[in-house]
Amino acid sequence: QLHVVESGGGLVQPGGSLRLSCAASGFTLDGYAIYWFRQAPGKEREGISCINSSGRSKNYADSVKGRFTISRDNAKNTVTLQMNDLNADDTAVYYCHADLYCGNWDPRRFGSWGQGTQVTVSS
Image (cartoon, rainbow, N blue to C red; front, side, top):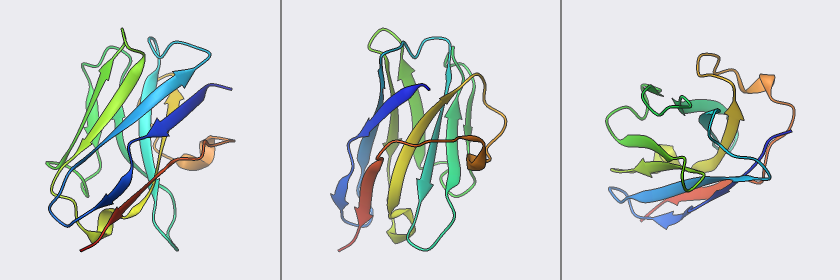
């Protein structure tokens, strides 16, 4: 199991920004695609972004496209999700997950999850 740790969540006002980080524990992220998922209260977990191992391919869900940017620094063994223009619909627990490639956004494929990081958008 590839163990990753999410951080960077918090409380932010509508229109604000947050920067989430996904760090690897016990392995190097280099060579793995990284997904970001989120789960809002009472809703299914959804995939919102994925970056391939090289960082040259990035994908976004329509709900975050144009507002969120995923990037990676393999030298620092981290993947970052920059979130701008946040709104109440972005309130959720955010999770990252490593996989061999981007392309299958079904969260049910993954057997275990980390604790995630809470993002709350509220005035």
